[in-house]
Length: 184
Image (cartoon, rainbow, N blue to C red; front, top):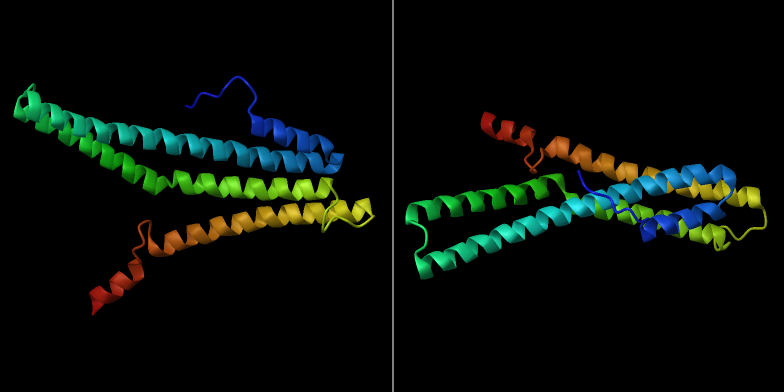
């Protein structure tokens, strides 16, 4: 659906550089989690901007057509109204689609968790707190624990978001309170 650049992106190089410095038993877990978050963040960023730019273009086109119509009388009024209505409908549909799928919010969530993971790896590699003990096995164990804590925290945020949507409905309407008010 989306074309990927042929060149390796800067973030992918950075993640690869971090992974190369990590111990062998941590490499695969960290790389798979970090690259998955990076790819999803990129996907949602592209979708967000693609829909947003198309929506702005449609809005500008509607205004431009309105200005042309009043100044030049190019199109008959009936066709102009249909064209503007279709453009407005598509623009409203795109806005509701981006609101429903929450591309920007998902992009930010993935990006934040990726940055937390990178920060943790930098602290581990530079032996900053809490990895400043002399025992490498303890530091490695602590790193894996902290990495899994970040992943678990992110998953619990997703679970809370999904459960609040199922309780309140996708647009914030709580079906149980509506049924109670109808019964009264």
